[in-house]
Length: 226
Ligand SMILES: [Mg+2]
Image 1: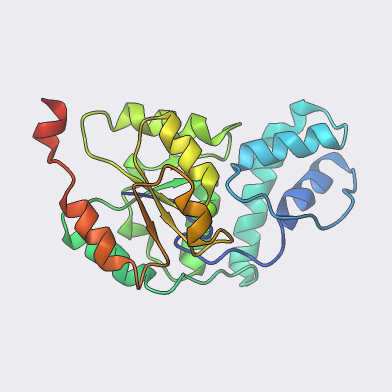
Image 2 (image 1 turned 90 degrees about the vertical axis):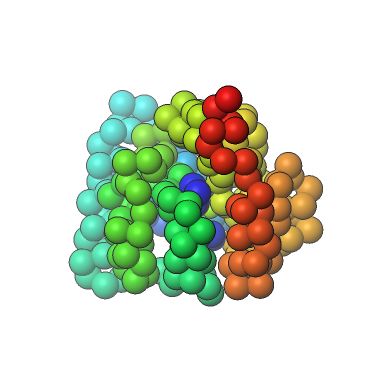
């Protein structure tokens, strides 16, 4: 079970990605223009690349900005600021999915460092997840790169992505991975139903029974690999 983090396991942050601009400013000296709309569903590597291009900054700064973003995430975590909240029912859903015989893992646009800082800050134990079979977009330029990696690594084993944006669905579909939408981000149930989602949940509390029922109907590994 490949969980997205922002808007899916954790409530979205209120500010729209100010940390990216802070990292860019500290690395390049360029002062970005200020707050901007959040970019839901994009991966970090993509957001950094797009902003560098938009600001006319050299693409070669990409890796340094990504590293600075990680450092800022750790600083914020250590300082107790930028703390996220789990969505309602997150703990229970993770426990129930595990009890149903599935492995909880991550498929997120963040780096491993940022993902871990967010989860710990929100009180979700990182050990609830299989980090060896999790997939991260800290250096990816598109979410489809991350889902392609997951599909390749998990070939022959049942897997499904849970996310909160239509972009999650597009990336899942591109890799042939089923997508379950949950409307705890900014996209409502009606919008997620317009995607290719095999299931759309209002949230992890009201939707938990449906989620477990769907998981129970997925063919076992031997069927898939036959
Ligand atoms: Mg999300």
